Amino acid sequence: MNASRANKSQLKIIYFTTILTICSLYAAQPIQPVFQEEFQLGNLQALLFTTLMMLPLGIAPLFYGFLLETFSAKLLVRAAVLILGLLELVFACSTSYFSLLLVRAIQGLMIPAILTSLMSYISFTSDRENVQRSIAFYIAATIVGGFLGRFLSGLSTELLGWRYFFAFLGVLLIFSFYLLQALEKDANMEYAKPKLSEITDLLRKKEYFWLYIGIFSIFFVFSAMMNFLPFALRQINPSLGEAGIGFLYFGYAMGIFVSLNSLRIIRLFGNETDAVRAAIVIFFAGTTLFFIKDYTVMFGAMFVFCTGLFMAHSLLSGFVNKISNTKKGIANGVYISFYYMGGTFGSFIPGYFFENYGWSGFLVFLQAMLLFSFFCIHMLKRGIVAKASLPS
Image (cartoon, rainbow, N blue to C red; front, side, top):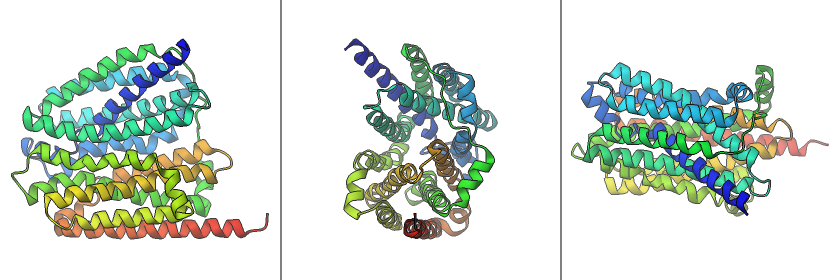
């Protein structure tokens, strides 16, 4: 009984740390127009605050396994959390664009170390019968962190100024560093360390190729919307405050509902690929609603938009494991890399369309990307069906 209580207490600390880490990743996103005004930046310069934090997440799964082989997860996560927290305090006190950007770049290296360690810690220390439930709560914590980071950053900026939230976040991360010493079980992880030849062999298989390109395109669109929406809202309604912008991200909470009902969704549509295609249709509908330049409509559109993204992501992340008979760690690592690389490119490339063709041109480009992602999932289904029809 005491061991069970201790494990639950440790998991709560892990979830708390996860929420703070994801808050740090996305806190700058809704207030990028504030940085733009204060430091006299162009749109793309302001977007780098998010892009630099996300880029390491796209490449981390390909080499962070070697780091976890050398250091225990507990040591690695505590060191990374402490550095992340101290850098938040530095960020809150910085007065130049270059110093702010440098801090965000270094923080970007800490975040994948934290998330990789925490997820590995859950997987390797939880009881076998409880590990799926523990991972589900971890995913929910990332979704909660994604919303709170955006909403509280916007609210705090409007009430107190942008520096206070980052300082508060730094203090909480340092407190989390203290709490993490309670992680009694320590482990060196047998983490997947893929070779380049193994990755290329995986991508030569059509089902993996189309799945990875599909999730790249899907998260590309999601990241683009999350990043450019604050600038669009400022253009549509210059009097809209940061709290109003942050509140618009409330639809992000749909991820929790969708993630916990993924099996029901698959049963409803009969199989994963048809369910993902339905998710992209929902995603497309949500994107279309954003053409209506009204805050109330956009608020509702965010719920539809986020439902499509998290529905597709939760189904495809599970489907990778279903089609992987061997080397699941490598297949999952490459999936995560394509997911976040899509987010990285989506955080700045659509800026060309936003700058030159306005909000409507930007949305048309996102719709084209979603049509391409639908084609990718169609090709994925064709590949799966063709493979199943081959004689065993």
